[in-house]
Image: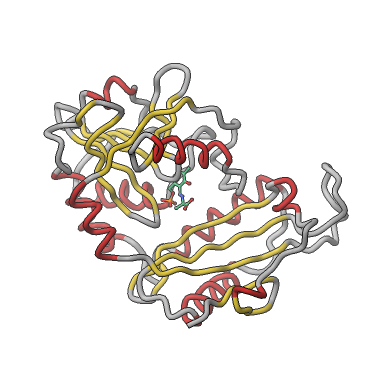
Amino acid sequence: MSRIAYVNGRYLPFADAKVHVEDRGYQFGDGVYEVCEVRAGRLIDERRHLERLKRSLGELRIRMPMSTRALGIVMRDVVARNRIGYGIVYLQITRGVARRDHAFPPPQTRPSVVVTARALNKARNEALAEQGISVVTVPDNRWGRVDIKTIGLLPNVLARQTALERGSRDAWFIDARGIVMEASSANVWIVTSTGTLITRHADNAILRGITRTVLIDAIKAEGLTVEERAFTLEEAYGAREAFITSASQIVVPVVRVDDRIIGDGKPGRVALALRRAYHRYAEAG
Ligand code: PDD
């Protein structure tokens, strides 16, 4: 079956799904995106993802090309047209097509909208979670507004490539003071040796993950506690558990960081319990 993409109002076979060479996303990385999980053909946490999208656009002063309701309809259409049961839907909005000039284009310039969807291998993801992953650490050399989900992901791309070249699955960004910021496309959590669950507070220096937000709510609803604060790489090395969270993988245990084994080197109890519990607290559209 050929894949279908939505591009500026049209549903097109992938081969014809193209954007202009002067699209500002292509030339400047001047755009934002969202990734939503799809489960049993339904969008997970759509409302929160679209709220964050709206915020990202607002921070960059790109106008909403259509209502969040209409964007939701397009996303669901793309999922249905591609017959995705389990996978992800990707939505990208850029400042549109205009003659190359750093300053904003004329106000009538229409933002470009692209939506694609892709099936993921559920068995492979489950196996990964049961096994746990290893990560490497890299210096956080990103700009100061990574709370905005922009398509400018060069440091993230380089970090992930470094991880793969060192035989690991992912990379964690560490700031100049040794604080664990986030992974290349996920948030980071640890359970300390005394059993405290910690994830870094969300400010301008990390992305406020939707998976992170839903899990924090879930943990509180269960009467448990989570500390939202900075933690160092040293604390992470000595942790009982570590894991990462994102819409595409939900919760993935981390069993090695650089050359240090975390806990007993197996996925932790808390990580696996949160992974199992997630969809009881998430919104399914
Ligand atoms: N990444 N931090 C970064 C840098 C991310 O890129 C992501 C998501 C997250 C987790 O956010 P959420 O829980 O809302 O997915 C944290 C997506 C999945 C991606 O780039 O593919």
